[in-house]
Amino acid sequence: MGRVYEYFLTQFASAEGKNGGQFYTPACIVRTLVGMLSPYKGRVYDPCCGSGGMLIYSRLHLEETGQDPTNLALHGQDASGQAWVICKMNLFLHGVTQKVFIDNEDTLRNPPSEAGQRRYFDRIVTNPPFSMNYEKAEMPAPERFRYGWAPETGKKADLMFAQHMLSSLTDTGVCATVMPHGVLFRGGKELDIRKGMLEDDTLEAVIGLPPNLFYGTGIPACILIMRRPRRKDRSRQGSVLFINADREFETGRAQNYLRAEHAEKIISAFRNWQTIDGYARVVPLAEIRDNDYNLNIRRYVDNAPPPEPQDIRAHLAGGVPRAEIETHRALFGAHGLDTRRIFTVRDADYYLFADKITDKSQLPDIVKSSPTVQRQEQALLDALNTWWSDTAAKRL
Image 1 (cartoon, helix red, strand yellow):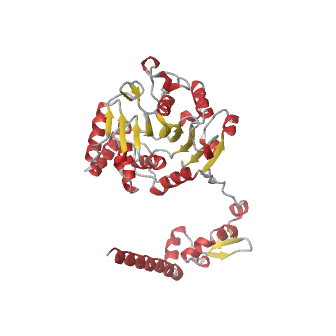
Image 2 (cartoon, helix red, strand yellow):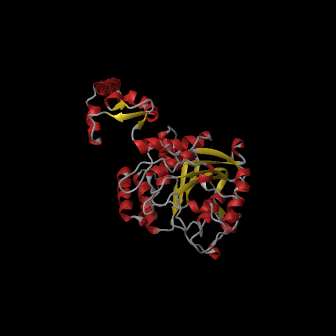
Image 3 (cartoon, helix red, strand yellow):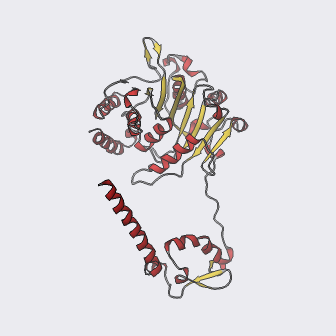
């Protein structure tokens, strides 16, 4: 029943467009966030819980990894009464009924408390609303905002949410939150907040996501991984991991999404804290200082493809450069394609298309009719059928 409910939530969010994005985060994003935090015990908190997907998958993550899901207490807040009802129903239909605390409260105006004392959490995972206004006079517990106050107008409450999350962590807690890219580079008071967070070594990772992942908006977003001041692992102190994953996505009918391998690539790079050329890089704080605390991801990890070389002579006089064919020789061989069926030698540096090819539409038929290609494809099918039969036999 939980999966059925989740399916209809997805359809409803898609149909609602922008309004749907206010309460529903795509499952691929949820799994990526939870996968990086790997909650295993204690309190998990989503200050903007919407339909409850972050909390539910935190429990499911423990089940999938063979751990006891009842080790987690789930805490959530949402200012929308409609979202609060949807969340409660979603949790119930997923069989999550114990150690669950969901409040219909505004996170910034009513931080979670217990017996009059602030409540702290081991994991915080959330997708707060982007670019909201707020009123400083309505914000209790001002100690939450130790790095400063963002402008009250101009829809810039994003870093207020981030500071609230930081202040709500236990000493060993970790937070993963979705944020708009503006928080990475906007100046003024937001620069002061960003500078304070960086100098206190609270920011562990910045991850750039592809565009058009969220319902109702096509703008790209990022993920911030944060810890309490100077609580990062010793090997990670004084640096920030930047991951540029904005090219890692599958194009869908209405919006893009992360495939399992895209999410796993992000999670693996974060867990291993590794530099991957054109994808991830560990950047020392000194370099970020030199860039005036600008966290624009492409400044540190540029994943733009290298420019494709052009052969001017081929453009002017015609012909296919021999170097281009040699570059793809391994791919031709893997498919069993003999290039002599398509090209003829013009001279030492250039080929021409074979005389029988007068239009590019002929190429698919020529490739398919090649005996070597047919043998290679049959060998692949035979290997697949053998594997399938062996696997089916083992299951029986």
